[in-house]
Length: 236
Ligand SMILES: C[S@@+](CC[C@H](N)C(=O)[O-])C[C@H]1O[C@@H](n2cnc3c(N)ncnc32)[C@H](O)[C@@H]1O
Image 1 (cartoon, rainbow, N blue to C red):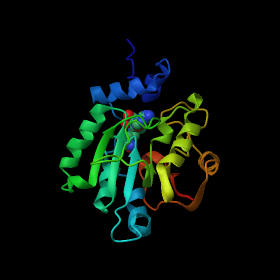
Image 2: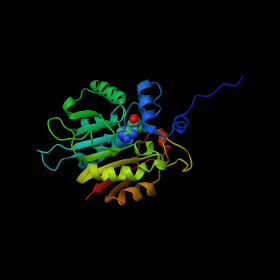
Image 3: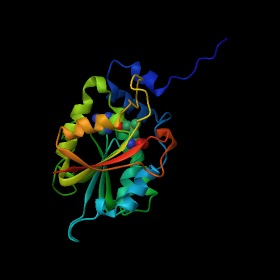
């Protein structure tokens, strides 16, 4: 009798009728199959922020910078930005992910005023709104890792991602991309859907971002097979 192997993440997405948002939510609701969750931030982002403090230093002592991490999962990167004193927001489609992120944050010892986890769809604006404790319309820093690659290119979502990034990053602010997966054959299914330097460039230059840094990280997660790159995009 042959043993059936468990379906991969790619199998599960291929088996949907294209409703990927429901699948992300049900994976988080079940909570027992989250293969992308590494339990910590990528050391590539840790090093970038330590080596380039100007990316997260406000221009005046009165101003506190804000950061957004779309598709933040358990929120490790949100807490990393918060640990640098940046008021940080994590956005997740899934209420269960937001709950898991809030639980995880409790163990961080960080001041809860410095971070916030929000349920919402990146492609809508309904999760934003100024006011007491509100979520800003624009952010000084937005970080993308394993979010663009979680969007199916055949659904036209990459162009919408770029357009939305241009709306969300404030003038003079930056979008930081930890580019992944750059090693993966372009024909292979996702998530993660394969990416390339040229794809990021095409998408982001088209909406007015200028790339001001492109570096090979000295430390990286094994999942990138040594090909991850860090790009920093300035919004004029
Ligand atoms: C591959 S996971 C990465 C999670 C996290 N960045 C990490 O590295 O652990 C992609 C995440 O994006 C979330 N997501 C997908 N589409 C989204 C959308 N339209 N708005 C907000 N979050 C979304 C999913 O729920 C999922 O948690």
